[in-house]
Image (cartoon, rainbow, N blue to C red; front, side, top):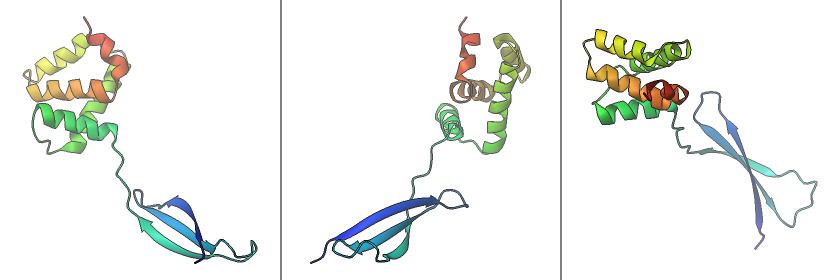
Length: 126
């Protein structure tokens, strides 16, 4: 029985998230200049876990289901942008208070700090 040699090449598809594996089969005893047979086979991929995924999971673990995920992610990103542009912890706490001290807003800010801008947590250390 001839041994088969398999070589794989992963290529990301333009649709993002799916990959294609090209496997080349060639008996080990064949001449090196012989053209190998190929086959394209889809490969199952594991979705990438992003900061946004962790952000939403943290909120859902501490508050409840998030219905408007894109809007909440935008709010979290805006919180970090505001902090990086010079806002203090006091400014953020005041903004939370102006919303009625809503627990949901507090959880969004905490999750944003943990997942989108951990470099800004020092502002909340005192």
